[in-house]
Image 1 (spheres, rainbow, N blue to C red):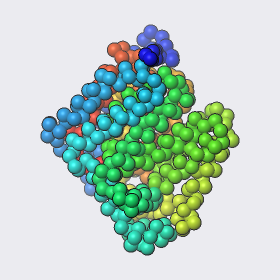
Image 2: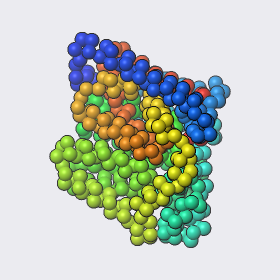
Image 3: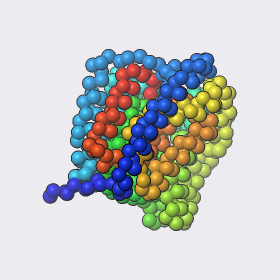
Image 4: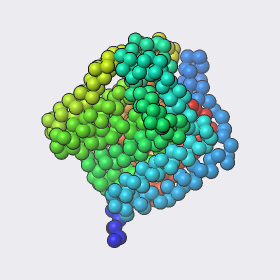
Length: 433
């Protein structure tokens, strides 16, 4: 049976000329933010920044042109097909298409780096699962995790023990290596894309969610999608989505538990409680919010049975961060540079979408995502490397692209611009992620 196309006319019709200046101003601000971050960074001692490719982490180095064939082909095909599929296919198939395209786009970009593009999770986490056995097993590892923070690699200093224990356990089942780690990352990429589209459909409208789907998928942020933070983000956003759509206590508890589980993988994900609270309070559902919070708290507290307390881990992470590179990187500079990197990761189309976004329900979701980013920035615990660290926050903000569905010429021009930014980044920037 043929499914009729869902019209993507804007929920808000502007007066003639109302948006004439908003989008150019937004794009000019997008460019200016990056230029100022680059110029300012060039005036500071390189030894203080520890980034290499100001304001990005890594180094500038052109990749062979032939390696870009895959991302160019996948990106072009997605630009041509995804907007039409998002309007015509049944909703569940749209979610499936978004998930598959997000994975394909991420893998195509990673392949441009060869085998190195898939090595980060193994180097940062997988290579250290032996610490679990060295400490005497999972229970002893949890019990001594905080007190040994100064003796573990940097990524373990900055995160709870969830991923290391997951990789240790999966290795016992015969699942290990770059292939398995990439599978986990791609599961996170797909889960994040589906989760934010489900949130958008529930809070805003199906029409808006369909319009936003291609922009959630084809983001420059995908250049950094083979790192562990996309695993954390997929898990956390799945929990957020379940709580947001919950109408019963059981669903709220399940979503809260999933979100609580994600906190055992990354401390910073706690900020994603903000979208949950914003939607619940707007809908006047304090009871469901309380149930979700209680379920999450139970999961976070559970490792205390084996001696690991989440707040102690967070405190130890702060100590280690400021004992290392965090104390050297200038707070004032990265307050701006972090936002510049984030702006590039979400792309110019997101800036344009924010300028055209008028629906208050859409702003409830996208605005809470922006608020999370600003809080993370002000915290001082995200000095540089935000192209990786803020991956869990990006999908919520990428939803702003849904406001471009009715732009002159349609969304494909904006999507092509997003793809172009991603390909240029992949061609010129070498980073460990």
